[in-house]
Image 1 (cartoon, helix red, strand yellow):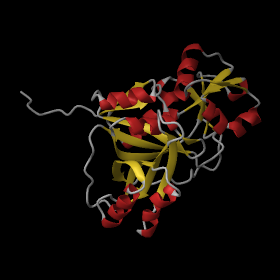
Image 2: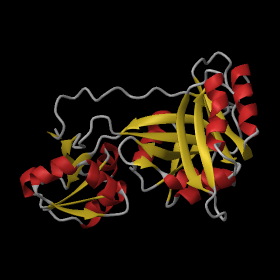
Image 3: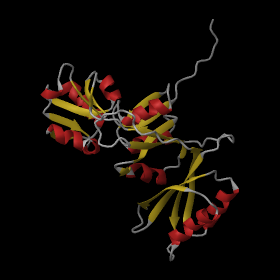
Image 4: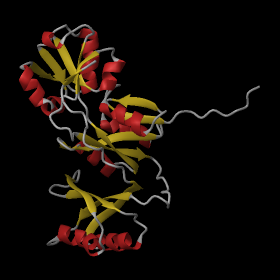
Length: 296
């Protein structure tokens, strides 16, 4: 009798259809897991909060489109922890039914941001553009209902999952198109003391006093701490009040960080450490020589 223990795969929630860029981030950052799609960001956070999954993978910002406000708003109201980050290069692909050529395409479907990020390529083609709710959803709809003159813009993973042929790769206007994801968990994760590059995320609400934000940030400057992100969002139920999300390089238990956080506390109504985690490297610029290359 085989008595060896088998470990169940890590269950990871993401927002969107199977084949979404969020699932691609899951596969690359957390290989070997079970990746579960949810329709909304709130459902992802709820699944983590209620223990139905161990982790969630949520986007928080894109280098071209900016902040993903839903993720930041949910971090403020849910008692979850950030335990990791990941930078995913966004490589948009044009896909259609097998046997369809680029010359046959007349109409293309995708999420509004994907269409905007591929504006140069689409303008040269002169196709009609149709905005839909999701890149992977556009691929899935095309696989079931599409016609030979229709195509979708989505990830290479979506083309694989929905048995579509890639007509052109890397059709985005910017080679630096990158989305930053956070890995969220119900429980915090102890940091390996050997890890040198660490990032810490804070959430705070400033007091209503003159130069409050300036004073909040002063302690980081005087203690030589580098800030990598500062984002403001309205506080739910409090008109004209704002939360600030701040990322800095360092551990909260190191003396310079402790002094900066202590000074920050003097000028805030509330202060919460969302998590400390290894700082992820940003991807290098895409080395491919030509955007919009035809698929093999």
